[in-house]
Amino acid sequence: MQETLNLEGFAESLKNHRIFCVGVKHLAALLRSRIGLIDTEVAHRGRKILCIQEGSADSGWLLRMKWDAIFCVRDTQDLRLALTYITNCVKPARVVWGGEPSATVFQALARCDSLTLIGFGPTPPRQQDWDTIFWSHDAIYDEIEPCLVQRLGALNTGKYNLRSVLKEIKASEVGLVWSNIGDTDKRGSLYWFDPSEGLSGSLFSPKEAVDILRAVADSIGGFNVS
Image (tube, rainbow, N blue to C red):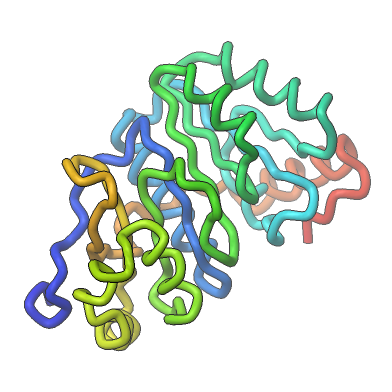
């Protein structure tokens, strides 16, 4: 596999880093697998928090997972409440943020120790503060290439023969990841990863899920959980 792609497998710890997951059809499995890996790293200690920005990608499926707190961020008051909880909650914390957080959020969370931030969406993030970006295996060249040029530079991106790499990625059903974790060059490098690693039966039972969805729908009326 490594020889075919001419890429190393990604093996760095995700704990206490800023991670973004990109996908559409396979986003749910990709995000769940990354969360699962981090939960295992911290031995399920601390708190796990979900923050959904109004207008972010459909994420009703996330409500079926186990969370210590859920916030629907629609205005500055919601944001302030979420950040207050995150800042003061028991650590280590895993914060899953639907959509891309603002610079204000990054600055606030940067002051927290033992915190992992996981963003997600259908397109790559704009901000440069992410340490790692994961793409599902069905990602397309036209979306990935500009993001990599911005981070790696045009010359380094060209060295990877991205079209060929993506063809192999899709055929092998592994994912592509850019990361600068543990890299002396902050432009980072490309790797492949197994999107199934970290997946487990960590969901609530059907009855628990129904009860939680009803409670959340009642508390944040108008939020689509379908």
